[in-house]
Length: 393
Ligand code: ADP
Ligand code: MG
Image 1 (tube, protein in one colour):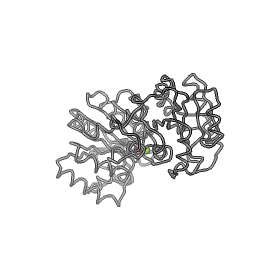
Image 2 (spheres, helix red, strand yellow):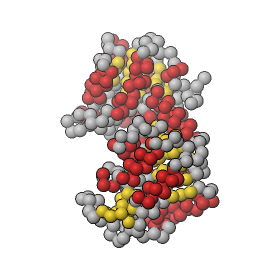
Image 3 (cartoon, helix red, strand yellow):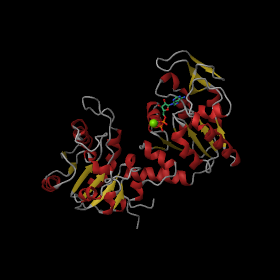
Image 4 (cartoon, protein in one colour):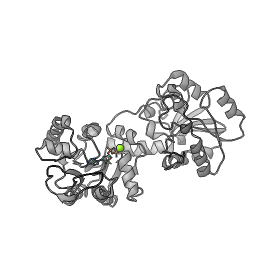
């Protein structure tokens, strides 16, 4: 880790501004339906609170208010939940910049302050310099713990670091350590499992990891474009016709690099997804049927390819795992790799959700909290919210 982390900082009597990702799902009554993102930031908040800061100021976005105040996207329910989780009072403000915010921070007796939704100001997503300056004015030091948003160059993730010394929080440090270290120089054999809806979403990951991996296992919706490119009949299964040439090229490239690309050899199929129609396990997909999960023989072949791996990186479910009848492939492979000695790294929002649904969330080496950010990491991209942090001395 070449960036300053909170372990390198002195917070004594300082105002500390922490960018967190509290973009939690809310139901129509504004109840938080999943507070994982809030609990994920608690270790960093507690760590800093223990170091005798003057103030701990938290900022986040919530939803897509598009630069306008939207009552239903205020961070008030989030601040209440945070208060409960910390067992400490949190002062929630109605805005995130300005003289009123500044004076409330300075005059309040509360140590912990939650600012209002950053995206009520259009300047946030534009990485506006004056807006970044106004945020920076609130504090003495900036901490980023919002891994879910570091792939975006916004005022609160990137711009602000021009005006304040900055450091990575514990969550961010953990993500960088696991994703960064593992993907830069993975212990071999290195196997990559890819699935999910679309080839187009994962091209960057394949291209970045192909030269590093010994095996790439492809399942999920994206597998069918590859199979079709190989001349196999895929019925009504997911197809991106304009990506067939690319799929062929990737298969050829893998062959040249001596990387095994494994595709499904049998499938769970249905004649209708919603409602679930006639379900069968087959080797070949007949006309009118959709492949919705990998079959038993494929599971065996995948397990065999994974059993000696020292590093496994997985992005994308191997079937429509949100429907129980089509979740077996994703569940079986999840359970299998959770028992291996390998370093297991899971990225992608839907893959992470599947792992927690199957009770595997604590059985992997690392499950990334950032969907888009982890994908960009796997693509080998520079994430602006990490690049902008102060380098380690
Ligand atoms: P992640 O969020 O983990 O990166 P993606 O968003 O790429 O994963 O893919 C998840 C989606 O892929 C899910 O909505 C799932 O239903 C879909 N999917 C998986 N397998 C198939 C399939 N065989 N056919 C159609 N869609 C699929
Ligand atoms: Mg997804």
